[in-house]
Image (cartoon, rainbow, N blue to C red; front, side):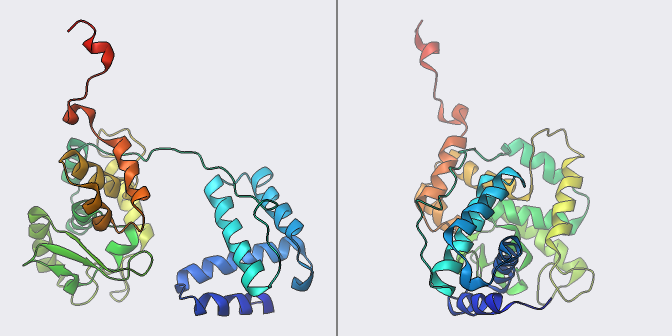
Length: 280
């Protein structure tokens, strides 16, 4: 699809700031939506057009807060950097986010889920995600050389924010990896798609997760990322310092990690309600 002059200039600004191709593609889609909505030359764009666009996203398109704020951030960069126009965050406000807690599986539920998987490839993928708290993109991009069996580490290269890090490799996951390697013998990307060249698609992994979850007795609304949440929460339950968990998860800010404090197992902590202490 041919890009507009505005999209070409915006793309240049994004490349200069080191954005990934996938992020650039998504940002350009939003700019395309905005251009179509306003239907005016870019030189005539004003803050009120951004307000109208975001209002339409909320009222007519019924988009969630995070999605609207995502588009807000893109338009802000478009106005300030590419168009060199004014942007007042009071006039173009961000939506207040609902503070919801992520779903987390218990250790017994993770075990039940992993044990129901009869495909060695997907069993290995989901075991790695839980073993090291990987994101979906990170497990897809793993290469054979990223598994350090001597140090029992998984090396994450070019993770979120273009950061490298090391995380944990469980002993039982290493055994699975060896079994998997004997069957598939990968020599570059660890988990290849059907074409034998590119990594297994995110959609295939997500579909497999839903398929195997349906075979369990688990009723929670879980997804692939739920295994990453379980990794962090179970480490906290085991007494791991939250600073180490932040590093293993690859969080830029400790604030992102502290959400798992709300997901801890109170039975493990032996915390009792004061109502239970009235008769002590």
